[in-house]
Image 1 (cartoon, rainbow, N blue to C red):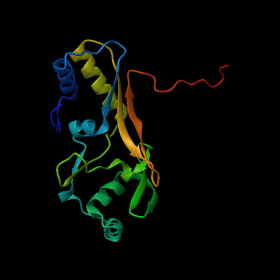
Image 2: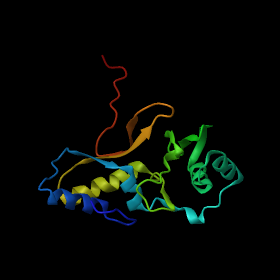
Image 3: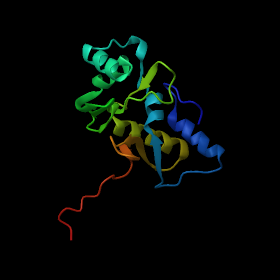
Image 4: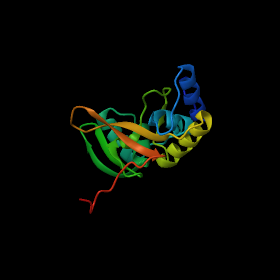
Length: 176
């Protein structure tokens, strides 16, 4: 895929890349898409130049060598701060995810910008599912995924932030 920017037709880009590779989707395939490109395509990007850090963000940033504007964005994206320790900020997002920096990320974006998680990741997955279905002529499932580290542990896990076109959970309660 080319660099994804705000307003990009993500479904069209994915369908085009797939066609260029000589492959195709079949009914029932599941497409896993990185949250980063969904956020970029949807314009879930914050320009740090316009962020005014609160006293809390300025203090914490100074104490841990972090950009206080990024800390301010993290605080704004947080429903609750779980822990602020040793330069690591663990937060619960308004979506209910507990992760580092409330999902705010400066990787793979231009300097001076950060991405935030999509407002409604299930709706984002549904829009992409519909676009891929239209472009490819088949019914696919879509998972919007992000990599979460676990604080003070080694390794990472992939987390489904948004899902469309498939049942992400099967409830076996009460079943034999």
